[in-house]
Image (cartoon, rainbow, N blue to C red; front, side):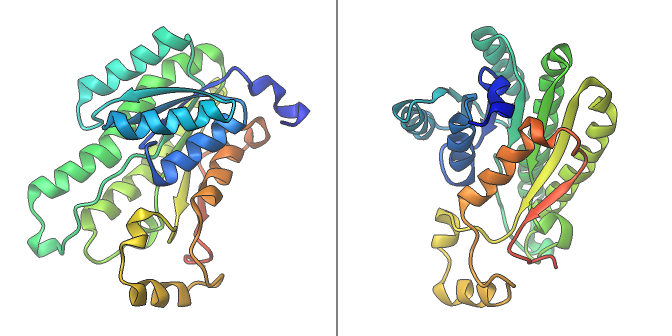
Length: 251
């Protein structure tokens, strides 16, 4: 850790959807940066294994189960973090689900569930995290969006709308909380190699990669690098920004 980041050692970060994929990579990186990381997911088994991985590497981690579609559970989770750790400095809203389908066939339930998890839960977490961050006069809210929230995608009306809403919400939060030393930004991944992309047909992946200027999939660690930077003191003058980590997909 560099000298300029030495003051970050005792900061506490919440990472949602931390049991696998992007969330797990982000949690690992923030722990390596010296933060205490609270890993949040709906299932205990995944985050407990992820937390053990962090502690085995010399980091500090706390596993916390929470159904982010449950409003009361979200508030209780943040209260629990404050009780156990006494502070909250960094929030990474990474958890998300998909319920894909063409608009004409999409049910209200599939639309509402994606919004509840991908946007409403992020709003509630940002609202709950704001007070402890305001008391500390320092905070980082980092919402994991998607290039789909900028460009749209057939079959993902619900997901694209939620991710676009996340951008608007983040830009509004940055204006409300900037005077308190709190920044709010979006990291918008493109086509990243995770267990979800591993399950896609090989030809589909090959065609998608062929359209990217960098001609390869992104790696979860590259998304984590962007989050690490935005969570640091070095990004103190960056807020309300959408950082596309997409291999040039939006170019």
